[in-house]
Image 1 (tube, rainbow, N blue to C red):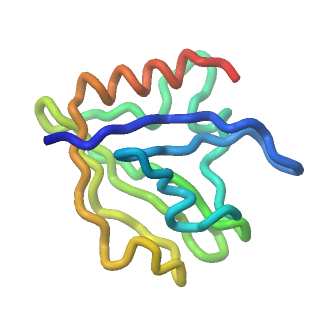
Image 2: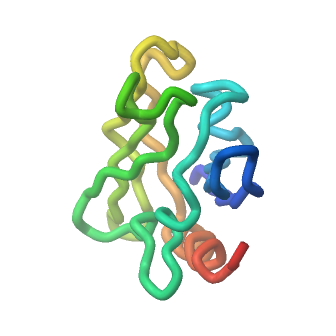
Length: 130
């Protein structure tokens, strides 16, 4: 059974830009780790207009930053994962968890998404202009 990904762009909050949030199996990963004060990556960075986003999965594993605390990732660390296409699935593994959050400890399990659902969700998010 595959995990399910939903990508949402949230409206700008005071003193910040629009942000991207990742719901996996109905759960907002950023809120799970950081609570209400955390934030996802800026939409303009995660979903750049006119070019493919880093969310796209390839055969080469790459680090994807999913969120950071209010104090910034440079302070306490980012919530990040390695994303890679493996056959007909997309795998999220090798989690990085910010210090002191405890919300996803011990290490979260690998997530496996159906590649066609994952690709469709990333394409939908890339094409939606907020």
